[in-house]
Length: 346
Length: 251
Ligand SMILES: Nc1ncnc2c1ncn2[C@@H]1O[C@H](COP(=O)(O)OP(=O)(O)OP(=O)(O)O)[C@@H](O)[C@H]1O
Ligand SMILES: [Mg+2]
Image 1 (cartoon, each protein chain N blue to C red):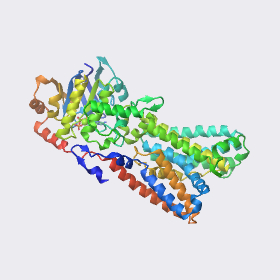
Image 2: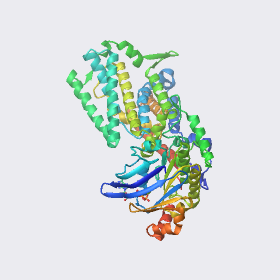
Image 3: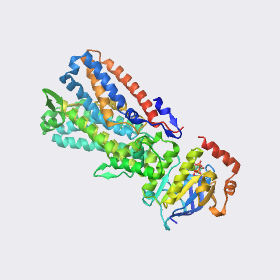
């Protein structure tokens, strides 16, 4: 780090390839992932077996889809606290329409998608129009959706869950696409893992190789400056909120098809886990910096710890401790990186 | 005259930021806008660049009256602005900043290879020596950052380049570097609007001088009509101002 302080004349000292690697946002997460893997793998043979890997990749996948979308939004300078409950809303719509209103599963999914995107659009519109902090706006959405999820479910079923999706038309096909498994070398992996890889790849391409990616970094880094050079800042942010909503729909549908029933309180509290995974992956809370791959890796760390602690026979409470420690370490590492990268004039 | 204002004015609520100011920008010339802090310099150029809308007087481009609804519209008419405080995005690389808002496309993608190459070439053509276009803009010095912003405006075919106090945060040497790029942009035929509160920076490159004081114009002068001393004296309290300028330079 001290290398950055060396300045000759009015120019930064030559930094070279090492520094460029060091300021990659996902570096800390990669190191963390290797360390966590090494720890659990050395303690538990099951953990490092193909079946074990398939086991911990599954929670990593469903969390990862959300974490990647949330990371894009955070790079764009905003938060979405309603993302977790929205997975529940999407799942509830799917199951309710398919089991109580005779919808085909595919049609019910489409309806869930429309609602989810509308929620994302509304979040984005309110945030960009009012300039209120998205933390507050989406906290409002979070509470409203939480109320709707419970209220509507109770009104329709008289209980706090809807189930019986298996009997609905079109279930087999949809379940195969979103909740099935794939055999690789005799081990079955959840198909959600594939979705997660696709989402991460697309997000990375958009961030690094598309014009929109440039705009996302810019609106998160300095929205006014971005607008001044002609970046459509509001549209970019609204699209990001809709992307998070899309991810919530995808995860909500995967979960609903997998378990064939949905609890009305599902997803509550998950919104912070998404943010934690994105931060572990190198996203700055202040926006303008981060990576999709980093968030995906943050989700892997989460998945490994979640299952690894079980494999070791530890009390699951230790997971929370672990999560807190990771978050703190990651935030400290990120701050160093940011200072290093930002090193402004003296 | 590419860009012109006639009796332009702007109020923010009860604050009269600008009143009855007339000025012009000609191709291949530098128009300097001078004034003390709070004189209305930034307000004036924000009107020229489409950030604010004037509420009195006329704004003309190529002799025809216009009203810009956004900075994008001003940009599309060839009016590019380098802002005082928000010129660039510090965490983004030089090449990403260079093309921000006007990214070259290849198919659906942002042509990253072209962006890197062109940014490097353009900076070199302006005589700006940046060893690595991948480094975050935040790691550049203030003068380098201003220079990159100028090179970008020139590359994107700006006809008018507006610079809001590009030298105020800089030391003598770096200010000199930026002044040289201003002269180079002028030689390439751009009309330049150079805002400063330092007459010593304005005089060497300026062709015309607009003096602002508390939102009103003290007149527009051609270079032959006025000396540095007179410029300094016209701006309220010359000695005080110099002190202020030096104070600001140390920021
Ligand atoms: N958005 C705004 N809302 C209210 N008042 C404003 C706004 N922008 C500028 N003003 C006021 O208008 C006056 C002129 O400000 P302006 O920023 O144009 O000054 P300036 O000449 O650029 O000063 P400096 O040298 O400090 O940059 C000031 O009194 C300022 O407080
Ligand atoms: Mg100003």
